[in-house]
Image 1 (cartoon, rainbow, N blue to C red):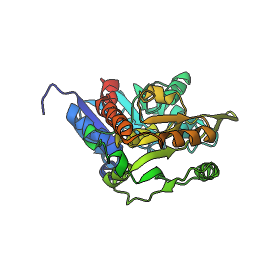
Image 2 (cartoon, rainbow, N blue to C red):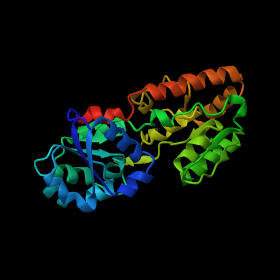
Image 3 (tube, rainbow, N blue to C red):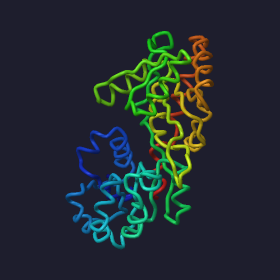
Length: 304
């Protein structure tokens, strides 16, 4: 490892968690390629005292919340960044860990939180807590053009948790004659990506449902899933949010945003009229945009 690379100490919940988490293991791969990396799990966090380098916590929010006192003691005076994927769980009404960001910020004193939503990053900064926006992405080697248009046997598919709001959405789509095929997968990440590559369209319905101060807000979250869908050459149907601009996806030909189920039905019908040549051209352009994006390296830039 070249001495010119920056020294980074990554703190994780466990080595197995990172290995088996679809986003965390990709981030760690990028960190290894771009830094002199030491990885420490929570059980060994005391050892950080004897290491040189910038500290990057990739702990889950619940772990940060519960371990704030220990981290405060171990990381006192250290240049520390906190990568965190679920900031809303500290801020929206009914959040799982209300006030967690304030507590963690006061005790750990990070240079900045690194958050995977521009909207939420701005909100955090507005609460006098330092935050930088970074992207959740898909590594270029995981990207694929998938099957040609004519070989994609599923017109509109979905894989994921069927939360109650999604069940309502699927019923609304059914009323509009949108036939969504629910696909089960093994939990193996490469199988998940391969299944996406067999779909023409993937519907990712995240309607506004959270409240802050009693008012419904747009989620502005989970855009990493949309990157995954596009990375496999499938059209991603997603609720319109400004987060698509922050992620650089609004101009991607494979992202199709909608404002309601009537518009969604129109979009699906129009998409089915496209020729194989038109679709394959969009697949090539859309996947290449994912491959060429800064993606996970936005984390490296944020802590440099």
